[in-house]
Structures are given as structure tokens and as C-alpha cells.
Length: 173
Image (cartoon, rainbow, N blue to C red):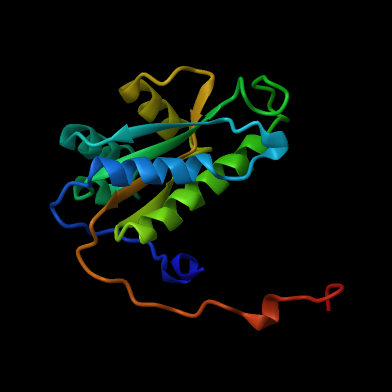
């Protein structure tokens, strides 16, 4: 559980590439996420070209750290694999599936001695369209998030985020 307590959002990176074996372990962690009815609707796009990372930074005001990141992983939902096997608006279990995959990758980032940050993409249509257009993502695939990653430029302070006042045993008190 140490990765859970050590994980922090890292937004500043050293100018050093991430080894392919580490990227593969991050992806393997994403594939191990729990999934509604075991549909596993995820697909991942790995970005490492500087021009592409810089382009992602321009797609969202919250993605500027991509200009320093060594790589980015884009967890995407393949709606043809989601519960119901279609793009029905009410079929939103894939959102939980992709959130779990994203978190798994973030936890593995800690295990690899890297830093990363979860950038919200879904449900912002402009961001989704920009990413899909840039990287040729088909219409039945929905970019859910972007994970900017690399070697951290500095260590993030640890914090105890437990809040007992938000825990309710047996019923809401």
C-alpha cells in the first residue's frame, strides 16, 4: 500500500526519457484494473514525441506540464467493448472502468520511481475532439484522461489526507 500513500500529482519533470520496459509495466497495470462485468473496454495510446506532447499541452489549460513530460498515456474507452457493446448514452460503466485503469497506472508510476499527473479529459467535448483528431482516434473510442509522466524534477511533500469526520459507520450520522 505504500504506492497509495506516496502517490502525488507531479507536474514538473526532468529532461529524461522513460525506459520502454517501465512504460510496458505502466500499461500492464492499467490492464489489471477491475471492470464492470469484466468488459475491460480500455485501449491506451502512448505518446512520447516532443511535438505531440507539446500539442497536448495546447489542448487544455490544465495540460501545460506536458511540455516537460517525457511521455503521456491516454486511457481510452472502446465503447464497442463496454457493457451493452454499444455507445448508448446510458451505458456509462466504462467511466468507472477507465478511472480504475487510470489510477492503476498512477500507482505503478510510483513503483517505477516516476512521477505523473491525471489530466481530466472526458467529458470535455472540445478536448476529446482535439485529441481524437490529432492522434486519429476513431469515433467509437473515447479519450478518458491523459496521464503526463516522467522523472520528477522535485519530490512532492507527503500528506495525511485521512479525514475521520467524513467516515460514517452503519449509517449516516
